[in-house]
Image 1: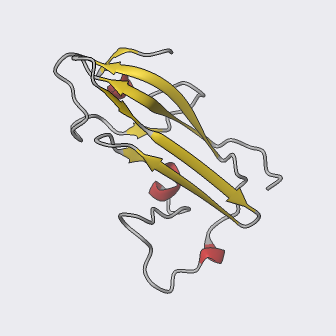
Image 2: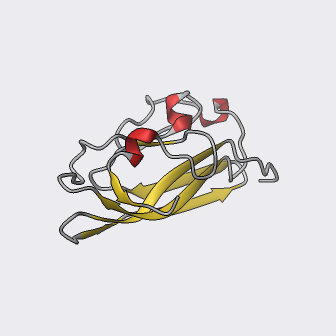
Length: 127
């Protein structure tokens, strides 16, 4: 719990507005205790590449849970802020929709440093 370092920052919208004005809300819940941390994200129609899952140091439990017998104690210890979820609001460009055709949200470096592919589908964003 005392490890303060942020290793990854992932921009994630809290609300996405399409070109016709329809809004879709995303939800984020992060819980951490001494020994385990959970992040639950509702992100309808827009996938997320989670860096800890990608590098094998975290598990995505809903869609691709680890095999039975997987040992939680074998995962590396991180602090509760290893990932900083950078919340923003955004408007999609005309012709774009939350239909899983958007480039995935992913960590790219800085606090607000979204993937250029993500920026290419946004009309309005705060960074």
